[in-house]
Amino acid sequence: MREWESFFSEEERKMYEKAGYKGKEKFGRNPALLIIDVITGFTGTKPMDVMDAIDEFPTSCGRVAWDALPNIQKLLYACREANVPVIYSTSDPDFKAAFGNATKRGIDATDFEKLAMAFPEMIKPKDGEFIVRKARASAFFGTHLITYLVRKNIDCLLVTGTSTCGCVRGTVLDGYSYGYPVFPVEECVFDRSRTSHLVNLFEMNAKYASVIQLSEALEYVNGLKRLEGRQAIARKDEYVKLER
Image (cartoon, rainbow, N blue to C red; front, side, top):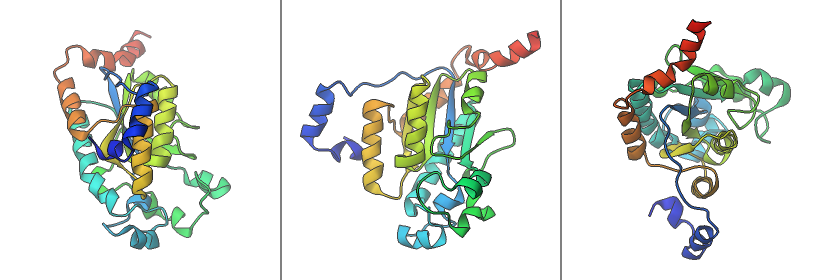
């Protein structure tokens, strides 16, 4: 049993199961990888205990970010190798300056430092990878993400990033609402609060998503390279353009 399952009592787990909150969605043939808000403002510049990390950036999640980064990198490299579209999200600094943060937290001077918006070198985007600049928690809200996914013929979402209880959860809920099977990858999401992390993994898995482990995500992505006809589906929008 995984930690986010055992965090709940046996009685509570049985209650959820009896009510029908169980089951797992099926993987698609043409997934996208979402890397939610893995920027320096949430990771910090180096591994630190969270209370020290907050002194550097108020939004920093501390060591858990650096535990997750190598896992995100493994999945990212596998997705690139399999030609799975990779999508990053980050904050929209212009909106922040005018209207405030995505949460009720007050704006800090470090929110507008270039460094706080930078992607860590370990997982930074390549040229051509889509970057969503968002004003609120969900990567879907007020962005072009859904248009991008439709044009790429995406049929399910692998979700990584931070924070589990905030922007990851907001994106997962909206992804589910748009009709996508959503798969948060357990070792690739993180939160400054362990309690919030575990509770939200359980809740997302029960109601809106299927939480999977990194090993399963890698097996799925690596298997896509052998899936006959997948690239034709992924490039369907390109054929439409040529026909016009």
